[in-house]
Length: 343
Image (cartoon, rainbow, N blue to C red; front, side, top):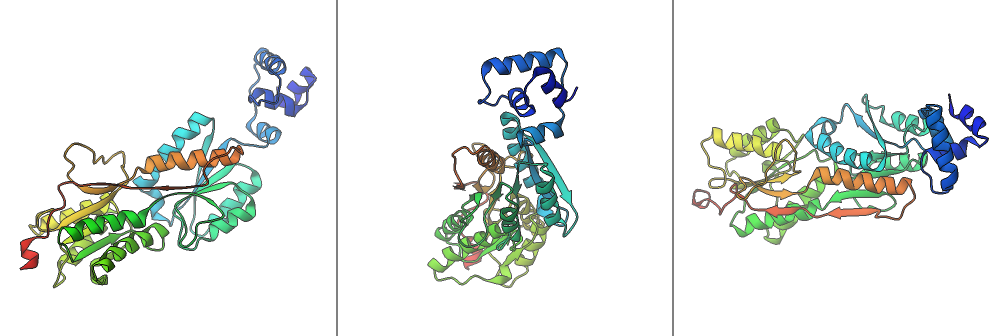
């Protein structure tokens, strides 16, 4: 039995029956009970396409992951999806992840909007100037951005971490400990978050009259081998850094491996600070943390994005912009500038 047949037997419109089945408040309790009881008697199972047409919603949220965008296939994306998925489950939504070929992302968004397969999307990894945001506005597809573009972040909903302040605070801590040669192992700087992280370091250096040195700065994928390669390069410099900021715990692990390969002590010879997304497979909590970190849960960011988007879809009042602050936690990977570095 389909929705049309069920509606005809009840003598009600398809819209009324569908809304009764889905708990919409505008349907009276008496009508809802009648519809639900008859549906049980008829062993009715709603067809998802018919349901979508009847109520104008699919109760599905989309995530588009381009194959060329390596940041989308790492543990950060997995933990974000876990957090968002918790909210979808709590609020009665499904999730659609569309992995697309290089250059096809725009067509995927257009198809999702045209086919009404999703009620909205979460946009990942915004670039400094991101054409996807204007596209989603044009498509009138509700969306929330995990992050922000460069410049004023108006006209769209977003959840982001105050990356500039987090890296400035970490750099200030190192500068107060006597460090003057501070390196950076950053993410890919066509992403706006990575640009803000570099700017945070540079603003702290400027307060001390120190010019940033591009020879001890690296931008690339946030993976362990890049941390190792970047730190190896830094150590080969005639005037190597005494401290390094890492955009990820993953790159920090690689940097530690490079230091150990040279017989150097982390926190004594070279200080390390990492940005910690609280990855589920790599916890850094505890009473005596081994790593000094800027901590902000990416899983929690996933929950915030999901709730913000569903509120937008359901036309409920809620936040449109949410700027989270990272917690600074001192661990064993930092210390005063080494005497060897100042001698």
